[in-house]
Image 1 (tube, rainbow, N blue to C red):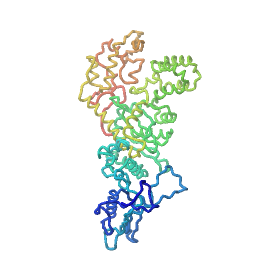
Image 2: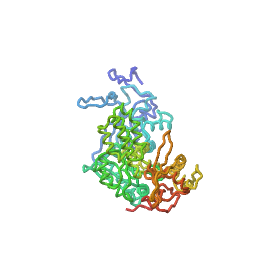
Image 3: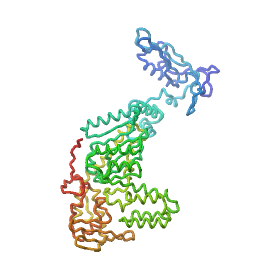
Image 4: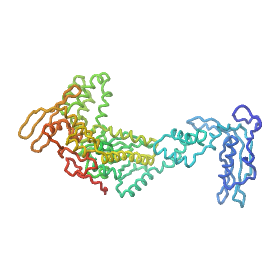
Amino acid sequence: MSGGSESDDCVTANGMVYIPEVRNEETPTVGMKFDSLDLAYNFYNRYAFLAGFGIRLHSSFRGTYKKEILRKEFVCCKQGAYRKDETRERKRQRGISRCNCKAKIVVVKTNGSKKYAISLFAEGHNHKMTDSERVHLLRSHRRISDSTKVLTKQLGSVNIPIHQKVSIFEVQSGGMDKIDFIKKDIYNLECSVNGKLRNHDVELVTEYFMAEQKKKNEAFYFKIEGDGEDKFSRCFWADATSRRAYRLYGDVVVFDTTFNTNRYDLKFAPILGVNNHGQKIVLACTFLSKETTESFIWMFEEFKKAMQGGEPKTIITDQDAAITRAISIAFPTTFHRLCIWHITSKFHVKLPHSAYKEYWREFQKAIWDTDNKDEFDAKWNIVVTKAGFTDHQWLSSMFDLRESWVPAYARDFFAAGMSSSQRAEGSHAFFKQYISRRNSLMDFIIRFERALSHQRQKELAADHVDAFEVAQCILPMPMNKQMATLYTRAMFQKFEKELIQRTACFLELKTEDASKVVFNVSERKNWQTRVAEVVYVKDSDHASCSCKKFEFVGIICKHILALFRRDQTEYMPDKYILKRFIGRKNNYSVEFPNRYDSLMDGEIRD
């Protein structure tokens, strides 16, 4: 190598020429032949790696008729000169790498030959070579292997970010200098793949859903629509497992639209339920481009087409005018409950800070510590008057809507114990482990299916525990043992908790006549005495409690259990056992007070 300055800058003014020092057998020579252009490129690129520079493709000359390449130039990556375009606004400033280097090889294909021969080899460079510890960073020497591309896709399917993918490849290869690429190359690879799919995303999703429908004997239901401008607008789907689950657990559904999970900013709106283990389950899924009443009505109508078993008894959503109107139209007989968590979380925003700090505890007691409507109304009015908020617009509007969110009003409607849409938000947190806002629609569907299979595996594991193990009873009582054999483990633990707490409840006869008996059931808790009212109707042999736990949660409350203790009732009457909470290990055939009178797992047929 001749001459040179101490700088890495391109030097052309003084005429310095840099000749790489590479073994003869690795150095190109005029007349050297190759079976293909790829082999010629690889040979020159190998030489460039040993020498310390990068290469790139340059000009080509094609034949007139066959359009085959007859002449090809491979040049140094510093070939050419930088030309500034004054008319183009650049978002980022790049350094200048070109310095008009003339090093190159030219290969030609001669008449009658299938091989390419080097016709020109310009060996000299007008710049210094790159050091050996940095040469792997030059673009022509960076390469993502097919196996790495496959692994990148697999890691992406579990939502592993790019920087963590690179770390995995680094560990596998033994160092960053041995992985043959840089982080930017992985970004470019994913951008390239996503760019190819961008205009075919909806078609791919449609083909995927049609394949699922064919594979699952038409039990897979989906509907995709555009907005009239050949753009994706909305999509609804529910698989056979979800449709079958709705027949068993579709009495209460939760709906939420606060989750963006794809690069198109479409709203992902899962419709969720709760199974017999108290676990959240996916009943159906929707993509919506607009959160309008018309869009929600479309979604609910598709939901009704897909599901058997009638309308849900209760649907829980956020406070949204468009959703409220859509539910009143699509589900006129369903009780629409507003998410109490979202409403109570607004108090600190809607009220002055000092007033919120002083009166929030009293608002909480009015909301949560009242069992009947009159008691709530009285406590609410007292705290509102005391705080001077009788004319507060937001508080007045919330009071007008109290039948939709206040427990004392809403407990008459079965909700499997749910009082908010936090189960939907908890589902979002779960699915975020698998999906990303960078997802295409097809990416989302594939990753969502994987997340869904993990969720269903948890349900299967809970079924296995119920079938394989017998719950230990803290209280060795006939009723406790009875429910341990019927309920799932999760539901039994809730029941046993009520059974234990009944020991702290004391009955006092309030009134009695020919038709009913009324008891006051007092309980000392947190230094306060709470009193519930249990009414026993003689003709129907039915007990009800003012706490409405059975009506709301589906599990008999400690107050009625205290009455059973007084009457020495050893076994739970069938009327107080909801079939939706029974484990699949049982074939319990009595009639229950809910609409799910069959646990048959037959295929759903449209």
